Length: 137
Image (cartoon, rainbow, N blue to C red; front, side, top):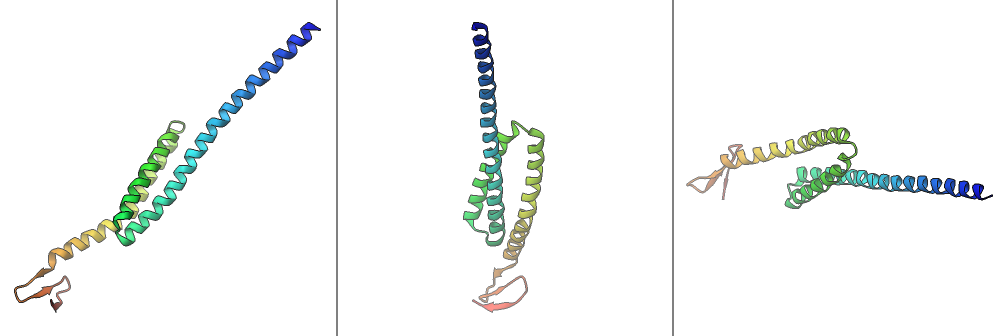
């Protein structure tokens, strides 16, 4: 009888230890899922603000873009500890996405700068613009 009781206690202890390990692993996976979801949400918000920045050129959009980019990088750093190869791929694709969104903005700024260079006040109080049209000040 005593042997059966010791065997039962040993089996129950082993089962509890296995269950505790499974719970710890699940808690770790929940953390990974939260980080992945946080990166997904941050990317969605970053995409929105990059579009807003490209359209409106607002300072708030640029500040928000930088903050969200930093937040997403923190989430990606956490995920990189588990899947560095996949996160490296995500970072390459993210850089391509950023460049594709910011290139039109850079082009607009270059055009605006070149237009500002070609526009200057004349002595007869007229302004010559990039289209060579004259108007009185």
